[in-house]
Length: 243
Ligand code: ADE
Image (cartoon, protein in one colour):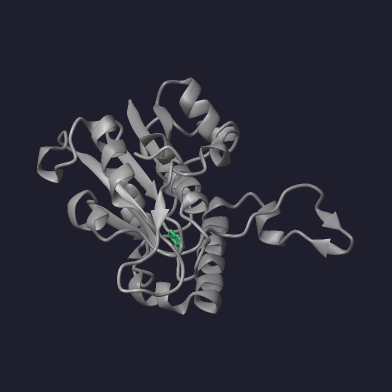
């Protein structure tokens, strides 16, 4: 079973987000266990202070390192990166991280893995957390959130749906957008005519080779139009045929 622990100063943020759909089912099936740790429980003073003013001056507050070290120590038995149990990943979510993409999600998605996710506040987090504790600094995109919490939900969702058995047989991770470097093809369902908008004729004919070719073409067209950079990196000249 995979175990994911989220370290946050807003534990209530996560009370219901993991109670739906694929994530709920994966938790109920014992494929993944998600824990939420309140960093504030590890604050040393009676005011449970987890941030303070920056050394050197300047705007904003900085998250203190001590409560985070204590929380990691509590979860892993050590705050020494070299002593973490094999395969443990300690992720800091920050806009100053490696961009999350499907390849990185795949790399993090280990059915027996252990991931700690530290949600930083946007103003900053004492650098000693990165220096001593963190194995992966990750950003979910080039924009700034007020904290890592929404990013933790995004990353957790993407990881869990790749775990073996997490998806029902009606869906497949192999067919997802990005699994072969380009977008998924466009889909249509009933009704055939909606307010004058018709379902493409080819999808109604039952010619599977033709449908396959059409889907491939549309997927490439749409990717080229919206994400030219993906086309340049994808093997679209000699395409693997999608199942
Ligand atoms: N925290 C603030 N902004 C973030 C981002 N873009 N990705 C991950 N964590 C963040």
